[in-house]
Picture 1 (cartoon, rainbow, N blue to C red):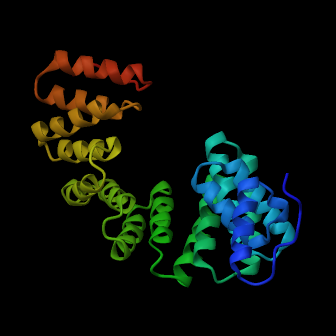
Picture 2: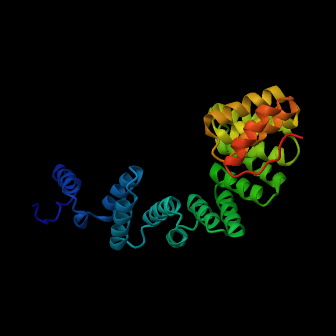
Picture 3: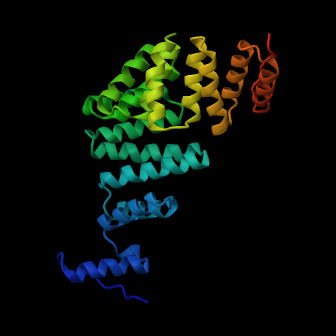
Length: 281
């Protein structure tokens, strides 16, 4: 058992050895706020969210105005809420994020964090306002632009979604989410030819992504390029189309190609995943 002695003052070799020993013995009660925060970040990156939360709470007990710790606490709670599908944890995450913003109202990343949580709480208008504030504070925050695009897409405002995704790509050209969102916005605008370039780049960033392959197949189907559409949708189903959308679209493509038996088999796969589709006309 290690005795609870105070660490020596100053950044000495002895202090560093003390802190290393402290971590090994698992005695967070003897750690200062900064050390608790750093150890919490390490635990969070390792997926140990419960232990990370304990460290952030301990850090905030010692230093209640520690904005970075409030942000980190909110992030961990958000991850836990997503894993457990717990709206209560999202609400708690939001409280931490609001506390962080009281301390650092000019922090663009903190506004973006708040927006993400508000979106998960089903408050899209407030989420959009938070994302816009993040973009005002830091126009080079690609995530804030991308999140605005997602909100506009959900609001069925594809032109505004396209504008936001375009700004995200100006900052971060290879971002998968912004490329996919751009392609989806073009599809919603009835421009499947324009969707092909961004969805192709999205697949360069994440080859084999089922949603992107399905979107590519849909664009090619709209353009009546059925053989190419079938190739994309075959890849999507082979990659694991759990939702059944690629199977359904594949069936429609096969119908157009006059391969009704194969189409019906594909529709059967879609139906087994909860999608109701009629037989080939």
